[in-house]
Image (tube, rainbow, N blue to C red; front, side, top):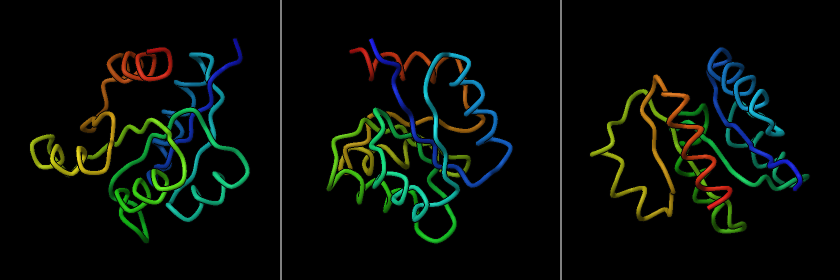
Length: 121
């Protein structure tokens, strides 16, 4: 089986680096972007198997990115936020077809479990 690819969209350089390293160590091919425009550029060259995006991004909101992605591709999506709580984001997640939400700081074990479920489910 080919390794799965994941696109991480996170403007906090330390969190982006940590997520990339963690997922690469788990055997995933990982690309990253710091904002929505950069992510959309990367999607034009390769569509990943999974998208992980922060919600508060410079420029456009993470949900705007998710909406743009879901209009063109079926990519399971996980959103992250250090600002929003699950109860605030659940109705929006359902409307935008977001598969999972994690509050920061992210529990990496639970994140990995969700990734495995989405990619191998």
